[in-house]
Amino acid sequence: MEYTSLRQISRDNDNSKVKVRVLRMWDAINIANNHDLLSLDMILVDEEGTLIHASIRKNLAQIYRPQLNEGSIYTITNFLVEENKGNYRPVYNKFKILFNSTTLISKFSGFDHSIPQYQFEFVDYGTIASRCYDTTYLTDVIGILDYIGAIEEIRTRGRPTKLRNIQLLLEE
Image 1: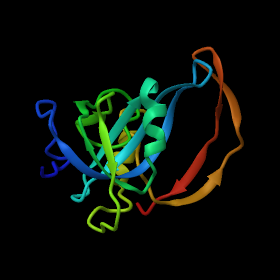
Image 2 (image 1 turned 90 degrees about the vertical axis):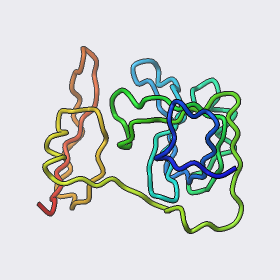
Image 3 (image 1 turned 45 degrees about the vertical axis):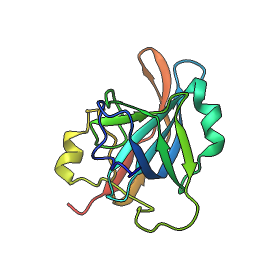
């Protein structure tokens, strides 16, 4: 079976087999409810450099977590593809991969330099400015950290939360 590129996956094709590197992996937590685990999330990249967000719901996270490592390459089959909706999307892709109880992952042994070890979605200053109060996407930036403010406690939606202002110097 040939590999499907991340650009080619869709909700209609349920027999895809992808070969990807796990770039980043983190726990998505519910900060409003005792920091309960919501899901185990990842950013995956394929040999074309296409990025996609993948998520494993909390009831399956402990099954798959021991099998996954940042930086490693895997083949993944039997996953669901859903529309990428909601706020704080880590990559710009209309789809998202969702692991389910029948998802199979196999670690690729050996070297494969065709899949990037790092991948970013840098944007220009105009895009950063337009996303200032838009929580749809997270944004990768390169700049010089010029100022780090003190941690302040503010109230958001009636609850205390911490805020720290930072200032970046960008090329623009």
